Image: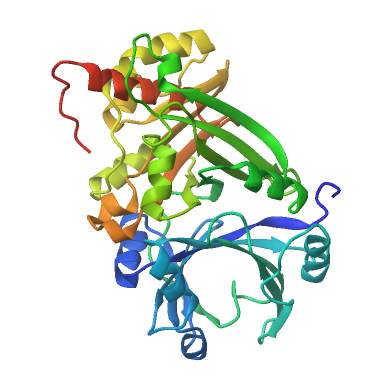
Length: 386
């Protein structure tokens, strides 16, 4: 397949199946300050047996759907999994051409191309199966059509938040697999994506002591150079396959699937300050990570514009590719942890600010995993707050 042959224009959005739609509404509006921009129509709810709300911030769009009775896609997904991402949607220049290319390259369409029309214009869309567990890919061509999907009612004026945190786009989507080779081959041969980045490590490789268990992963990022869409893919790395955080995700999710989505912001310090003040919890970072940070940054040749003490207070991670090239990132607790409910699932959001570094925080993986295990080895490890 030639580069860009699918004609992908960009990432249109994520479809998130949840058991408690009002809980999701409160999270997106009251915590993340997203706008509520639309909902499912009564006709769609009756036909699809699910109710949907659509939230947006910048170019980020998240559709959350909950079952209405039995027989709908949301119910089928949630019978097998905790809450999770059921569909990733891409906007394409020409849906029929994308359909023909995908089918010719071995893709498996769920439907034919479907045409819809409203007062504003037309919509052409279809979906295909993927190796990403029960997550499907949807392709959408919009010509004046306001909604993201047929049956979406767009509000004249958004409700709720104002995107005061400045979220602008989804930087990347990360999925976890027990074995990722089929997904990588599929992304290359069917979707026409190319490999952009890779890393593999185990904490016992980077720790200066013997460990009896640990965490590790192999990760490869595939991307569409035309649109810039990046899909990161992880699998567990031996020798402690079962205790790998990647394997634990697949067990909790009950299969392969989307682990997290990274939300890009131009001011991560202000964003995290505000979210913490609103009660949003993040994955904790050990103090030992920041003890080792100055030497790591010196080795990388990175000079920070930010105050390291502020980064430590907020538990923001830093990685770099060289002088003037670094990134800042932090991970929210997974949904189960945020909501205190196991069936909310292991999906989580990352927040990222790039300052010239287009990598994916490989140094952070290593440094953070090692720091966590070093703290675990300490005789009396200090208590960490969320």
